[in-house]
Length: 461
Image 1: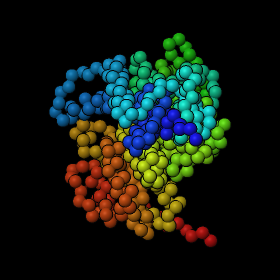
Image 2: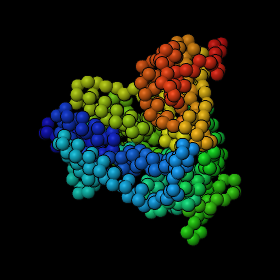
Image 3: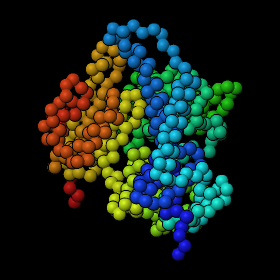
Image 4: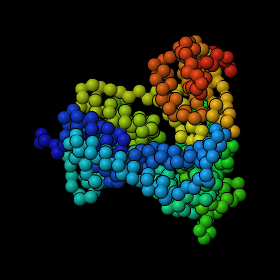
């Protein structure tokens, strides 16, 4: 058999694709990676990183206000959106250059082109029509914003992609959605001074999260001035000069300067040519793979959001690394998608790992619930009306902590550390035996002693 052009061809230079390419190359594989937009993918270019920079910016208003309670006199602050966006863009360009440099250092060939599959071992570059033969192909094309059903005026809607590049800060914005992206941008625009209305079709925000977390965060967002309307959808959007009129499903209308939809993202599988190869699409829309990220075609693999397993950047990175270890490192490495910690960078933040209370009660014979709500120490002098919330879910038969849920300052940082303990199988007794660090908010997690509730599941007849 004639030698292939490369050992591995990666379609998509996002978090999962870049990690897979780099690690495969470190094992000696000849690797080519194609990217039609910018190296770094959603997370680096138009997702986690630029969004977090905007999150930081949105929190300074609170800091200026809170300073007075601690004896500081701060002049009237002013904010300039174009400066923030320009500085954000400069940092993203730096990160992209760093990603490119890393790939080049490992001799990964980067091709700036859309790539489609023409066979189990053949990829065609759309920029020039060239065909590349590869022993294996890895699909890492991520996901793309979904706008929902066609409604009148849908052409006026922006997604999180465009929200990161607006020429000016909108005075009023309507955001439809109730997940990570919708809530994070609602907090960003609210913190920067916009009037924010959040529209969500469900009974409460953050579907899939613990019900106590959902209720607590919703109340916090409303306290901060975000108008949260659940049980509604956007039915139509009219353009009226420079502003928009957003018509809701209950026949009411809201005036806005921008309308943003963040109702979900779909695996980016369109136009890849996978339907001609025999790769299967799962019922949830992602490419179907096994525990080693193999598709139904032996030479084709897929990692990250395009598989629609756990759609988080660190998961895509882990999947990409595991793929390279398995195929090129001689170390078969399945990815464990259980107990993945995650954070929502709203204000206040949310950090969770493990089971929700509803899931625990459904799966376990006995569940012990520990929870607390308290005023953060900083708020005692600042006077800010906010409360933190923490909750531990414990298997009542084994004493293992099966869920941890936090809403409050630095919840994302806290859940990363707590995630290690939960992943290792720490028990409530282990938490109790850990000395508290005082005064901190995190000490609440090791000083919870009184059960808020205990549930025993009735045995099936």
